Amino acid sequence: MDFIHYNPSEYPLSADDESTDEMNFSDLVIQYGGVQMLIDMDTIPIPELQSSEMEEVMENLVETFQEVTIKTPAKYKKYGQNQIERFIRMIQEEGLTVPKAAEQCGIPRSSAYKLLDEFNAGDGSVLPGNIPKALKREPKKLFPQHSAFLIELFDNNPSIVLEEARLKLCEHSNGLEISIPGLYKHIREKRSISLKQATKYTVERDAPRTLELRFNIVNQWKAAGVSFSENCVFVDEAGFHSQLMRSRAWSKVGDLAIVKVHTQKGVNISIVGCISPFGIVCFSKVEPLKKSDAALIEKEFPGSSPSKKRKAGSKSESKPIQLKQGTTAYHIVKFMESIMDILDKHNKKGMFIVMDKCRIHHSRFVVDAINQRGYKPLFVPQYSPFLNPIEECWSKIKKNIRRNPLDKSDMLTPRIAETCKQVTVANCQGWVRHAESYWDRCIEREVGLK
Image 1 (tube, rainbow, N blue to C red):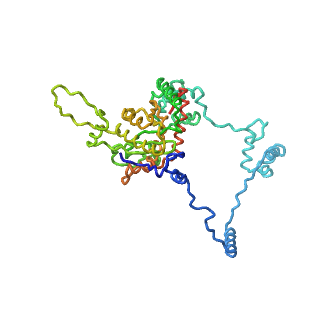
Image 2: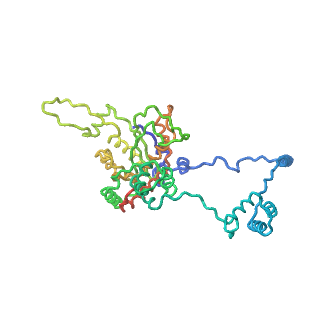
Image 3: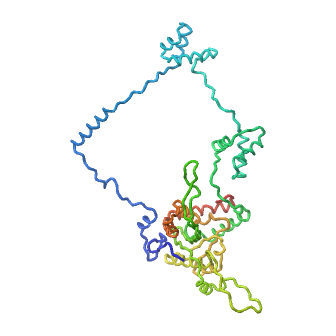
């Protein structure tokens, strides 16, 4: 396997490490996101201005301000209810014309005619300007019963399109007519329902047997003294390829969002990683097995290759061992040995190694290799990835790679190694706390966990 990232002598694993390697907390701060002051206000030399220079600057500013002409905005002549009442009284009692009455009351002539028309249109009991104007609104089409139907419809079928939702709503409510923009505005503004990127959710996650399995396993963990934040490390593998990119991109309205990537997707690269509450332990690249490795695997793991009984009369010559593709139990065993060597060096012997229930993790060679070194394997229940904190670690690493897709000059493996270095101790501790917060929810048999 290609060793990617970890140097125990430079990055201490634990704050309570009693080994010969002493921890340097200043190194930890710099390595895991600390800030280093480069310059402050006290260190910046500020030139002092002479009094003559200051006077010259002030004179220039005064001259500049004097040259600026400030235009006085036109005053808007306001009038109130007293002026309107006097205006109406002068027309009724004194018989003045509208222009003369408006001039004496300080009301613009155009506004005076409008006020008089408004007064004549009424019954004479309300002064003009006090009659509330009726708002021109279209009659309401959707009522609470329609909203309840739409909420139930989107809950049962989140991927439904608006056209189908509109047809079902019109069928449910006889005589109702509404446009697609009107329906979208209602569900968006009134019901707070929006269209988002869909996330797959396996039905088996909420199956009764899955809930019962989580309940039993978490109780067993508590009884055995398992603590994610104290005595556990977390192992998993993930695949990468050269066309990793975000599912959404920016572009002008009406144009396609195009992101340039490698011409060929290439072969997936498998990375096996291990993190702990004290930071990252190791990340390694899985190298494909070669024909020369067949004899070594057969020697170290006898009986691992599939064999069939020979038929009577067949030749005694044995066929060459067929090597499996991808990550195998052989890779996992070698990776576990490197992890346990690092943990032994930092006096962490006997910790729980948390893994998912993948077939290669359950291999007897993997389990035996862990038990023989004094460590204990711990398997997460099926359909429960949220109980393994390293899943969030892979999410962070892939997100950082997707932000800047690879171009022709980039290599995938160095990019992965560089991104793995950005995982901090604070990240690992946060992921561990988040995963451990699901324990009580599993005991309560809560559904919809993700």
